Image 1 (cartoon, rainbow, N blue to C red):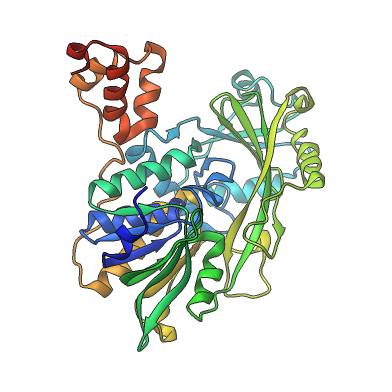
Image 2: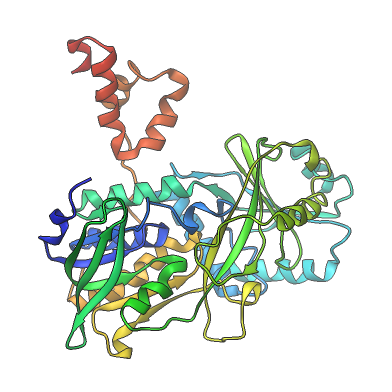
Length: 436
């Protein structure tokens, strides 16, 4: 990592605060439009909510009844990300499953709402569903297929940052923003501290994007602003078994413990929704874990036979204009706040939303920023893939140094770093002629 002074000596068009999916997506969009942008993260990339969730790429079906706008956004972004971010997504599909404990009234509403949102929800027989997923409870009542998928939040964020760097963006981790500085009502830069060395400095910029997730309220306070964001904690359980090949949702009103998501060789059960006052409240609660297991047995009766790998928790940055709304009562939509309306020119905050809609959130923020900076370039993030496909020549060279069973996985995971990794491996393993 470059010294902090390498960044303080430059003036940036935009500083993006927050190294999760929203910040990385905003950075990529700005860089692709020709904006000189720098991303700052207080810990490592994907330290916050983008790594502390169940890893679901929503079809939108979960939100179709209560929040149709969020449902439509999810299905559209689901389709886009499966196209541009294929190395981050496992197209598992999903089932919505009704158990005998869940009445038919919600099912009827849900089927209608999915159709109105443009979300494909195809009924299939219980027999067929249990043939495809034999660990499901034998007493389930009805099942629908939806285009849910599993998404790797770590890979998604890193590949967005890699893409942004190709267009000239910068990023620095372990850099805490301690203040948003201004003069005469306009942003002049940010004060920062290296969280490992304690070094401090000021990074000049024309605009600050606050994309710090559950920490957006804390960043806003350094600029003298107040944002009504309520962190909401969710606890999850990771099993050391892939006992379902598909995302399994419980077909009822959104509640705790209503989803199982397969990832590689594991399965994640989530999640709870508990009010918290701290964005870093990420210690799992034993009582919540027990509740999740009790609820999970309704869909998978043999859940106690699967070894728990770990439990973990994250906080959702829920924004609402209604101070009384919290937890599942708060909307999962996102909002872009232009703080010029509050007297501070050159700063905007984006909060709320879901990882599934991160790209759309970045686009909306980049539209606002570019409008302020006089940049007329159009958004291209829905068109250009995050990772360019490796050439046939590079793949042929890589086969000499990567084991056959790991070649595709290495290409998928490494993205822009694949060529350099191949070269390093070749230098270590092969003769100079083969390594060239």
